[in-house]
Length: 244
Image (cartoon, rainbow, N blue to C red; front, side, top):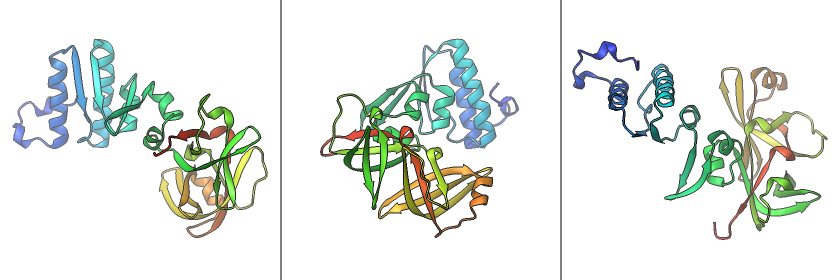
C-alpha cells in the first residue's frame, strides 16, 4: 500500500533513504497504535513517493481514527494530513487552529512567515477606517477590521499573500488600495506562474505572484521600474508587542 512490495527481499542496508522511510511508515501502521508520532515522514522521499505516501497516510489515518502527532516544516504536508495545527516558535505555542484558517489569516508574525506571506513592519499610522505603515514616501494600508478588537500597538506588521499584489507599468488609482512605486529585484519562473520580487524602499521588498502570460505582457525585467498595488481589504494588521 505504501509502495514497498518490491523491497521484501532487499537488505535494510541496501535501501535508499526514501525506501527506508516508507518501510518505517508501513511498520508503524501495522502495529495499529493508539497514538502515532510522525516526524517529517516524507522528508526523505522524492516527489512521486511523497504523493504516494501522503495519500496512504491520509486514507489509513482517516479510516483507523488513530490519534496522530505530525511534526513538519512542510506546509503542503500539513494541509494534506492535519485537521488541527499548532504553530511552535521559540519553544512555545504561537498559534493553533484549523490549518487552512491559520495559513490564510495568521494572527502572529511567526505564522505569517511560515505561510509565506509578505510582511511589512513599521510604526503604525492612522487613516479613515484604516491602519498603515509608511513605505518610502508612500504608505501601505490595511482595513481597521483586520486588527483584533482591543489590540493597540505603536508598531504593526502588515501581512498579505503574494497573489494580492497587482503589478503595472502605470500608477493605478483604484481605492481603497495602496499603490507604491518599486523596482523589479528578482524573477522566479515556476511553470505557469511567476514570482516577482519588488523592492519598494530601502530594506522593504514584497513578492508578487502573477501568471506567466500576465508577466510577459508587462515586458519587464530585473532593474525595471513598476507600480505595485494591494487592496487594503487583503491586508491583515498584526500588532507587535513592545520589545519584540
